[in-house]
Length: 460
Image 1 (cartoon, rainbow, N blue to C red):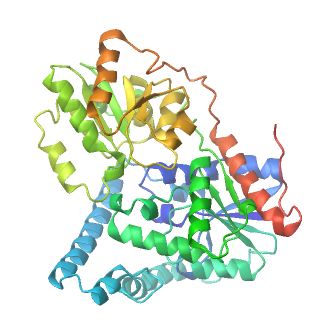
Image 2 (image 1 turned 135 degrees about the horizontal axis):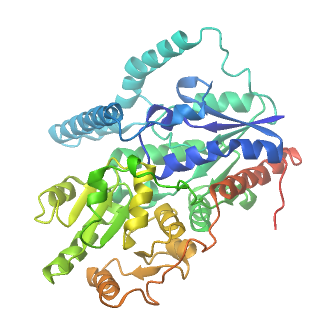
């Protein structure tokens, strides 16, 4: 039986997170038994940071977002990250953006610089000590055999994964990377400066270290192929690229009111609520939403906006605008601690999902909302047209009035052709089908060198 090793390194260390990539990793691992039975493979989640190769279990990838312990972990993580970013930016400002100092501050963790020193002097010793305590006899790469596959599914751009990747290849394994988007490269203005640099370095470092790429949409796959054709002297052949779609059936069979906090239910009591689910970052266009709802509130429309998502980067002014808004706590809400049951409750009670992203790799909340029978209004960009087709409404992200008119129409006349009502029978794939689609894309790439190394299921 061949092994399919699934990188879950970042999620293992940040199990309290519950946004898009974390959901993909968890759902793929959850469907491991189905893949094992169908294809005769052994699916093993692993951590591959610091030159290590450790098996994980599904329980290692979950942390209840509603508990005090989890909230404390997230606060500590955010505080440490804020200190790191603030200190880095302060040094850059004091030194007048000296190029040599800036290169030291922004260097990826595998090159000499600030991140390298933090990893070598703090992270590595702590990690290695924890490994020694947990298991003194375990030989990390003994499990890897020729014909095995390592799937880089997690967001390990900040981590030093390449020593582990190279050891897998030395033992005859193949490596495939999942690409969620190229936004840090194509739209760096929407990202933390360090993320943009680190992701670009990680992506370019993957050349020659991975056997292929699988994107989360045709749009991202085509963007990826075009980028490599433009930037590499000898770009990989087209057969090295695949794509799959994310699933949508994360909702529980029933929603237990005991798992939904009272203050969450209270937000839906008095007025229609429009919902956005995403990390709070510039490309998600929350400022556009606030502009839209300011127009509606100025016109005495009694509607609410609920923002669900962990705050990201370059949003200090936006967060201040939200928290100091006169409607905050009345018609404007911001929640960072919503778990799956509560998220499904919100999907089931909201009037519509609003999703005005400027750039996107997929738009998972769109599918999750449709799967819950919730109407969707999204920005008119290529990937949303690919995913949403004619099931959703589209707004002009350069004109808040465009969205305001659609919401006003819903409130005054109900749903219409511009914003259709789609029941949860709209036919999107499940996470099981998504996992199979990802595996088959990987198998097709691996088969190029192996003569059908991994079995491929030719579904109609």
